[in-house]
Image 1 (cartoon, rainbow, N blue to C red):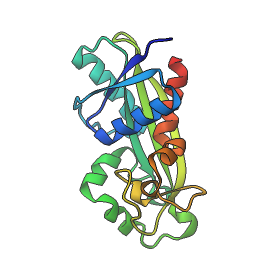
Image 2 (spheres, helix red, strand yellow; image 1 turned 90 degrees about the horizontal axis):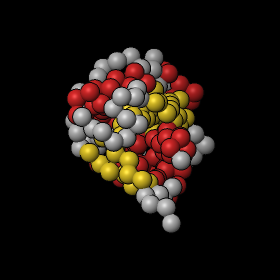
Image 3 (tube, rainbow, N blue to C red; image 1 turned 120 degrees about the vertical axis):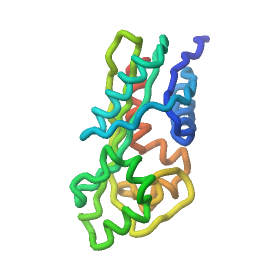
Image 4 (cartoon, helix red, strand yellow; image 1 turned 90 degrees about the vertical axis):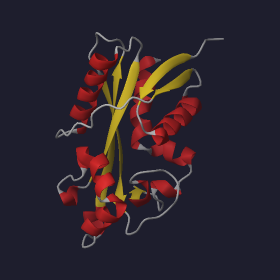
Length: 193
């Protein structure tokens, strides 16, 4: 019987930890997610990949962590709003929330409501190694109203492509099968196994 491998997940978001742990248990069974609640600067860069990479570099240089770790950055990209909020999603959510996004989308109909959720997982195998990036994408659209009480963040307004439900209306298992975060983390699991 093989022993479980520990993988450090650096985040202050307990919702993300639960999602990743649930996904790791369902998909792998031999990975234990160890949460480190370490707050690093919320970098304001033009691309989600750059935010994840530079955040991992910051953690690598400032914390002295010797073991493999990962962190992630996610963003909601709305083409009708020129990609907004994109890499600024966390700040925008804290500032205007889901109601603010719905207000910005009030006059948008049909194809103009398309949106993409993107997660970039940055993985550092060792302090001396540069981060490796894994990208996950979920396509969908912005719902007409807030729906559902599950999930977190923009989940109540993001309707997954081909589904009639928002992420917040899905069970954890359903969301983990299709979400941007699980797709990116799944690529990391493939890489380390």
